[in-house]
Image (cartoon, rainbow, N blue to C red; front, side):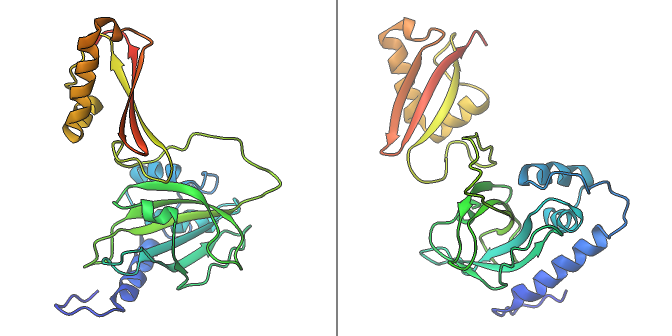
Length: 257
């Protein structure tokens, strides 16, 4: 992998080839790792990545090639760092043995997409999307991985599955990695904050982080308690609108420190 002071628009292609080759060296077929029956989800990939101490890309490439689950792995990258509206390019996709998705290499994904929520390495996002009229609607899970050299935004590793309209999934909680005080997505968002019943002052853990990021929220909570001390009683809930679509909900549900 040669490094020079000059970069061209096609440098990402060489970098991509190096990444794929590295995956084959790090996790070759027949390496003895018991991965065939592992669940192919972003959450499980991140757990396995820590266990085997290999890159997320290397692990996901190996896993999708041996799994029986119907799914497809894809890698994408933002085409430019200075775009007003993010455009993502699919660099490659690999289908499992029981799934044929056929995402065209070089496909440009525009508009609202869960890929744009992975704004930092390790951030995850999940959702349902249809990228082109010729492709089916899919369930997507993705995670940000280190960017190409010289680029600001992370690359994306994602898992796609066909979305069956005949078998709707029940409403479920989606667990994501990211910044808890900057919830992503569209529509109304809530920061749910567990508070103890001993003090209105926040000094540790997430509460301290929330106070540093939103000092006015801590001040308003103190004022709410000072007006009526019984407000700080188990079972009480206090909501503060931070913006038109974001609120912090304090839940006094912890007894003592």
